[in-house]
Image 1 (cartoon, one colour):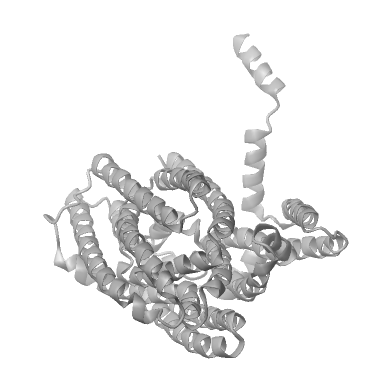
Image 2: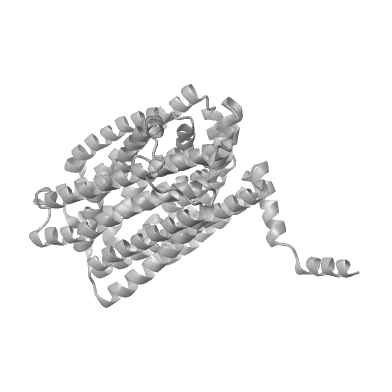
Length: 520
C-alpha cells in the first residue's frame, strides 16, 4: 500500500509540474495574445477589476487547508468515519456561509466601482469594468467552493485528479479564448469563458467527492466544537490571505486608482511573472502534507525533523533557482519577444521582486509545518506587519518613483518576512535553520552560478533577441542539469536519478534476452 501511495505522490508531483509548465506557457501566450488583440487600455480595465475582486479571497479563511489538515490527521489515526463526516460537513457548511457573504459583498462592491475609479477611468471604461465585475465575481465564488472540495481530494491522497482536471481546463480555456477573440475582439468573451469553465470544474469536482468518497456535504453532521478548534488557524489563514493578497494585488490596485489603465497593463506582466514564480516554490509542498503529518504525530522533532524537510526544500531551490537565474539571464529578451519593447520595464520590476522571493521560497514548506503544529498564528502576525509596511511604502513610493517604487516596497516586505519567520522557526519550532539552508543550497547554488557565469558572456555576443533567448536559455539549463547530476546531487537524488535511468534507459535487447530466458 505504501508503495502505491508513493507512486501516486510521484505521479502527482510530475503532473503538478506539467500543469505548472503548461500554465506558465499558456498564461504568457494568452496574455500576449489578449494584449495585442484587445489593446493595452481594455486589458488594463480587466486587470483592475480582477485585482479589485481578489480582495474577497480574504474570506476563504483557509477552508481548503483546514479540510486537508483535519481529514489527513483523522485518517492517520484510523478514526471512525463519523468523525470524518463531522469534519467534512462542518467545514463545507462554513464554506457555504462564507460564499454567501462573498456574494453579498460583491453586490456592494459593484455599486462602489464608479466612485473608486472616477479619477483614473473614463465613463466608458467604468461601464466595461462593471460588466467584467459581474462574471469575474461569480467565478471567484465558484472557485472558492471548488478549492475546499479539492482540499478533501488531497486529504484522500488522490493527487492526480485535481491536476488532471486543472490541466484539461487550462488547455480548453486557451483554445476557446484564442478561437473566440480571433473572431471578435471583446474582453467580455475572456471573462465569460472563465465563468463557464469555473462552473463546469466545480460541478465535476462536487460529483467526484460525492460518489468517490461518499462525502457528507450536508449540514447534518455540523459540529460547533470543530469550528472552535479550527478558529485560531482560520484567523491565521485570514491574516495570511491578507498578506498574500497585498503582495500580489495591492500594487496593481493602487496603480489602477493612482495612475492609468495602460500602467496597470504593464505592471500586470510583472505580477504575472511574480505569481508564476511564487507558485513554483509552493507547487509541490501540499503533496508532502500527509507525510509531514505522520512525522508530527510520531513526535519527530528538532534536528531529526529538520532532516525530513531537506528534500522538499531542495526541490524548491532547484526549480525556483533555474527559473530565477534564467530570468535574470534572458528575461529582457523574453519580455521583448512576447510582449514587445513597450513592456520591457516590467522585467526590471519583476527582477526586484523575485530576487528576495527566491530566498523566501527555499523553505516555503514551513507554512504547512506550522499548520500541522497549529502554530500558524505567529507567522500570520509577522507577515501582517510586513504587509502593513508594504502598503505604506507602496503608496509613498508610487507617488515618488512610480511602478518601480511599488516593486521595491514588495521586495522590502518579503525581506522582512524572511528574516522574522526564520527566527521564529528556530526559536519556537526547533528547526535547525542554518543546517536546512545549507543542505537546501548545497551543490545547487554552485551549479547555478557556474552555468550563469559561463552563459552570460556568450549571449552578450548574440545581437538578436530570439537567438540569444533560445541559445542562452537552453545552454543554461543543459549546463545546470549536467553539473548538478555530476557534482551537486545528494545521495537521495543520485538514487532517484539512477532509478530513472534504469526505468527509461533499459536497452531493448535486455528485455528480449529476458523474454528468451523465460521461454527456455
